[in-house]
Amino acid sequence: GEDVEQSLFLSVREGDSSVINCTYTDSSSTYLYWYKQEPGAGLQLLTYIFSNMDMKQDQRLTVLLNKKDKHLSLRIADTQTGDSAIYFCAPASGGSYIPTFGRGTSLIVHP
Amino acid sequence: EAGVAQSPRYKIIEKRQSVAFWCNPISGHATLYWYQQILGQGPKLLIQFQNNGVVDDSQLPKDRFSAERLKGVDSTLKIQPAKLEDSAVYLCASSLDHRVASYEQYFGPGTRLTVT
Image (cartoon, rainbow over all chains, first blue to last red; front, side, top):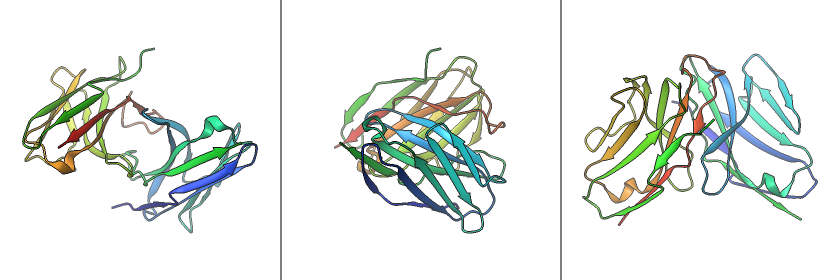
């Protein structure tokens, strides 16, 4: 099955950019999702990228995909305290579109 | 539009007791998912329904877990008997149709289960 690895913590200063990295093992992953989870809340889909794309930009979010290295990253520009949350990388393989979640990266934004 | 509703939000039980969780998906969503999220980990899919049929229950521990979606709308997830390792947040999600990747999964707030 799919294995997804993320660093557990990232601390940034407000206004800086945040980059959250993820590696995965299943080269047949077709859709690669990023979810956000705030304390006590369910998950919210932030963005996703299709496997034939290298980059996708959506307002302050930029997703980069290196399919050869099976590496996915999420960049948040001008990080705000409201961005503090856990971010999950979740590739979906085959035709199921069911995401496999990593352990999540806890983003801490300090003033 | 109303989101995915789950109840109860919190539950504390002793091991070997039974517990049930309820989920009401977004109106019109054909696909319903139950996930288990153990503290410090990402959610793991337990079971997926398309209307009232099971699409995937390969990760469901069927000796103690059961789930149903009899009328293709609401769903219940039951654990009987519970073990300490079942302590987790149980998340319900729904989407318009799992066969279309661009159809987003919408998650409920989850039920936090503590087994003592």
